[in-house]
Amino acid sequence: MTDSEVSLLLHCAAWRGLLQAQVQVELSERFNRQTDPAVDHHIEEVWTKRVSKEPWLFNGSKFRLHSFCLSSSSVSHEPPARQRMEKSCITHSLHDAAQSSLDRGSRAVNQVESADSVSALSPASSMFSNNADDPEPLLTLRLGLTCYKDYLGTNWSCRVAELRQRGEAEFGDALALLAQPLGVGGVLCTADGQVVLIRRSQKVAEAGGLLDIPGGAPRAEGGV
Image (cartoon, rainbow, N blue to C red):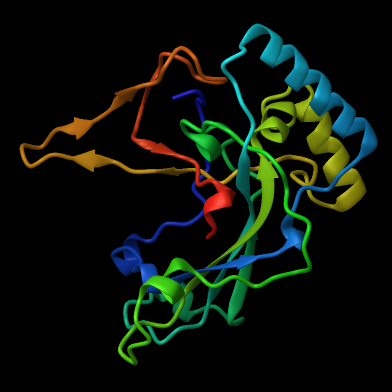
């Protein structure tokens, strides 16, 4: 672990987890990082210094996790807390997300695609059949696009506290100027009750040589 504290954004134990068909994605440029000339210049400076010292680093596109929404659903395993909610959709901003958990074992990132606002359905929509028995989406992830270079120049920058303060003051969102790349990871348990861990390479931008769970970061070039 690279953080002594983490924040739990959503716990799905009450649903016994969510099926792939119960999760969808809204992909839009509205969820991209807010740009600023001074911040962009700082990102370039950080990247140039890092690459000069660690030439194995390379850039590549990532998805930016902006927020998520829990919607009313016909799912029969809604926890009591959901049943008491007065609104059908509660938006949870990611202001207290643990920064290192966003990009486990990520390798890289490049161009942020410029496009009109697009609503992209979850993998369930393209990979599952249109069977009437499929459960309705319950969780919507709101994603933009970002890149690994922006991640190192914002979330991992020595100026991250300043960027958070500026984001809060200028946009009402402490994470508005941060890359916030989406990361994935899993706890792999073996049949004999062991947990599988990996040791991170020394040739990575963060947490080199430390123990970690298997994971990484989706590449935006591959689609949602």
